[in-house]
Amino acid sequence: CADCVTRYLELTGKNRSDLKFFATPCLDDAQLQPEDFEKCGQLGNESSKIVLKCLWCARLTRPDIYWTVNYLARNVTKWTVVCDKRLYRLICYMNGTKNYVLTAYVGDKPSKCILVQYADASFAGDTVDSKSTTGGFLYLLGPNTCVPLGHITKKQSCVSHSSTEAEIV
Image 1 (tube, rainbow, N blue to C red):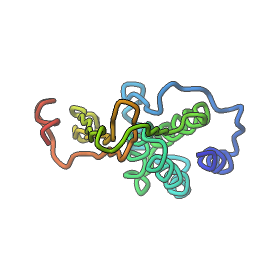
Image 2 (cartoon, rainbow, N blue to C red):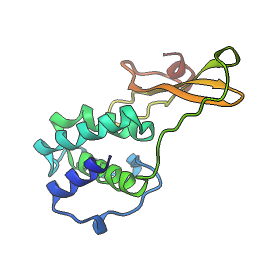
Image 3 (tube, helix red, strand yellow):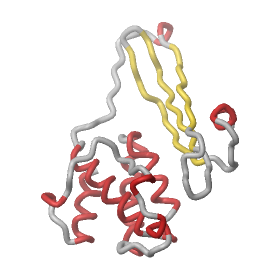
């Protein structure tokens, strides 16, 4: 993930001291101006290089950044000022949380372990098209075992009319 921060700093000409600390990688849409969704962003063509590095990190070790990275990956061909702001927030978050790692521990026989799936969905989380996002995490759990086996964050293909419907989808 250090490569993502370094690449961003190279492309923007910023220093590490220019990066703030943020507690989350997500930027609230209420903080954005409507015209920012229409104006072209500064990073445009170069954005894909950074976003794909971040996607690799999200898939392997950083599920906490998955939603933001997926949003940016869907928009590399139509990069806006909103994307610039989201990428800056993501890079600041990654820089400030570089010690966050995905860990696992095993201390039980397989017969004492079970598979546990956690799932959730947002309701109309995307302000542009009102589509929800599905998220999930699969663990192998036991009294002395906790192994993350997989995680997913995916934008739904339909518009839900309630949070219950979004979770069923």
